[in-house]
Image (cartoon, rainbow, N blue to C red; front, top):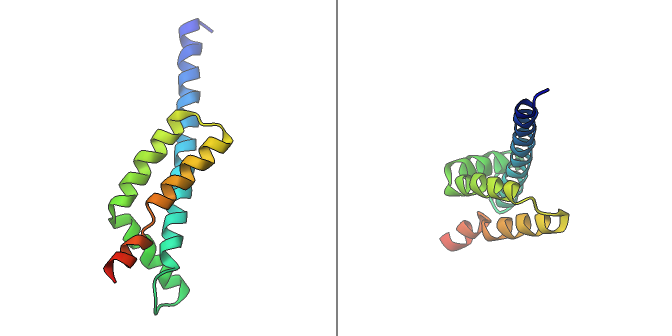
Amino acid sequence: MPLSASFSLWWVVKGSLFTTANRIIQTGIATIIALEYSAFLLNRDKLEHVESAVDYYLKSPTSVAVENVAKEISRQGYKKEELRKEILEFILANRMSKDLAEQK
């Protein structure tokens, strides 16, 4: 295999891994944020809480922020502890339940 072909293949594999990691991080963050928000919704059954939280999340600017941060976190190549810290700090800073507290 010529050098340029192996380099191109390497980029495809690396890009594929980046995309996979990005999706996992994005999905994980979004899930935690939506579930945390759903816990603060009152007067509904549990499934309605989650459905309402997901709907709110998808319509909020938080979903765009999560997408952008997931890409950035994936690019940084953090080690395990750094990755955990970055994700947790982002989730805490972007909790949608803060919106409910501000509305009261």
